[in-house]
Picture (cartoon, rainbow, N blue to C red):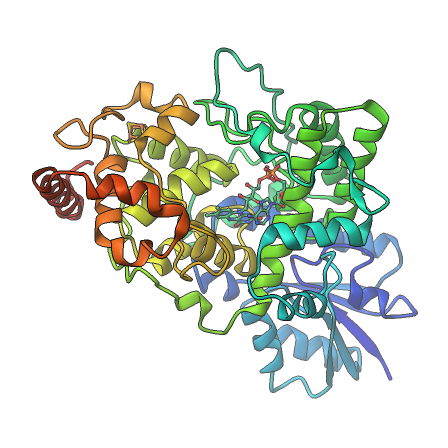
Length: 504
Ligand code: FAD
Ligand code: SF4
C-alpha cells in the first residue's frame, strides 16, 4: 500500500493531521487550481498570500525529505489523477477541509481510483465532534458559556477552577473611544522575497476578475514570519490591546490589533500557541489582565465558537435572510468611491491591504449593510472577495450570523445595528465627512441615521421579541409620524439615487 498526502492551501503546518497520520516521508502533492479561484471573486493579496505560503511550505517539506509534487493546474482532479498513477498511490489522505464545500468536492471525486481518507482536522482547539457534543446539551448557544468551558478545559487564565482576577470577562473595561494622540505601535510588515515576487507576477498576469491592489504586498508567508508577527504583537501591542479595541482612527488601520488571522487561518500559527504566548507574557510581565483576557477571548472564544457553529448549523444557513433584505450591493463597495467618509476610509484600506479590524467590519461595513437592507448573500460574497483572511467557515457565521442577524439570532443576542452616533463616538471619521452625524434627515443627514431608524421601523414586529431592543423601540414609538415618513422617504430615495449612479 502506498499512501500519498494532498495538502490544501490552508493546511500549512508540519503537524497537520494528514501528515502526522503517516509513519514515513510519504509523497505529498500541493496544487494551485485556477478554476477554484474563479468560483467566486478574491482579493489579489489573498491569492499571493496563499500561493506564496504554499510554495514556501513545499520548500520546507522538501528540505525535511518529503518528495513533494507542486502543480499549477486548471482543476484539482486532473493533477491528482496523474500523480496517483505515477506514484502508484493506493490511499490518498487529506486532512478534512475546514470549508464544507471543499469536503463535498473531495467526496465527489470520481476518477481517482484509490481509497480517499479524510483525517479529522487538528487546526482548532475544539474538534467538530467535540463542539457538537457541547452544543447538543444546550438550549442556547452562548459564546460566553463556550468560552468559559474552553478556559476550564485548557486551563487558561485559571486558578484551579476559578478565573484569574475573579471575573471571566473584562469587556466593559475595554471599550474606550479614541481621544487625542494615541501613539499606536506601527504595524510589522515584510518585504516580498523571490518566491513571493514570482507569485505577484503570476497574479498580475491573470485575466479573470479579482479585487484589490496586488502591491505593495507586505504580509508574511512562512511560519517563521508568522511567529515573528506573534512575537512582535505580544511585545508591542498586547499590553495595550484592550482599551482601544473598538476604536477607529483615520490612517491607523490596524491600531493595537494582532493582524494574525491570515496566518491562523492557513495553519502558519496554531491557536493554542497564540493563547499560551499571551498568557505567558501576562504571567512574566504582569500585564493588564483586561487586555490579556480580551485578546484570549477572541482566539479561544470567538474564533473557536464561530468554527464550531459553522459545522453545527443546517446546510441552508448560508441562504438565511431573516429580515428578507434584497437591496443590491452599491457599486461603491467595490471602489470606495462614496461621500460617506467612514465607508470610504475602510473600503480603500481594504483595497490596499485586504485587512480591516473587527469593529470596522462589524460596526461600519456590516452595520451599514444591515440597516440599508442589503441582501445578506451579496454582502457575504463581497466580504469573501475583499478580505485576506476570508474562508467559508469564518465568513458565514460572522457575516450571515453576527453582522447581519440573517439567522434570526442564533448566535447574536441582538442585531449589531447602530446610527452615525456610534461611528462618531468610536472614530474620527465623521470629522472629515460630507455628512453630519447629528442630523437624521435632510441633505446633510448621515445615511447611517435615516437607515437606522428606517431599519427599526421596517422590522419593529420582529425586533420587539429581542429583549435588548426594547429601549430603542420605545424611542421609535415616540417619534412623530411626520418625521418617520420623512425618514422612510429618504431611505427609499437613497437606494434610487445610488442605483442611478449618483454619488452617495
Ligand atoms: P484581533 O482583533 O487581534 O483578534 C485576535 C484574533 O481573534 C483574530 O486574529 C481572530 O483569529 C480571532 N477572532 C476574533 N474575533 C473573531 C470572530 N468573530 N471570528 C473568528 N475569529 C475571531 N475573521 C477571519 O478570520 N476571517 C474573516 O473573513 C472574518 N470576517 C469577518 C466579517 C465580519 C462581518 C465580522 C464582524 C468579523 C469577521 N472576522 C473574520 C472576525 C474578526 O473581525 C477578525 O478575525 C479580526 O478582525 C482579524 O484581525 P486581527 O487578527 O488583527 O484580530
Ligand atoms: Fe460615516 Fe455618517 Fe460619520 Fe459620515 S457622518 S463618517 S457617513 S457615520
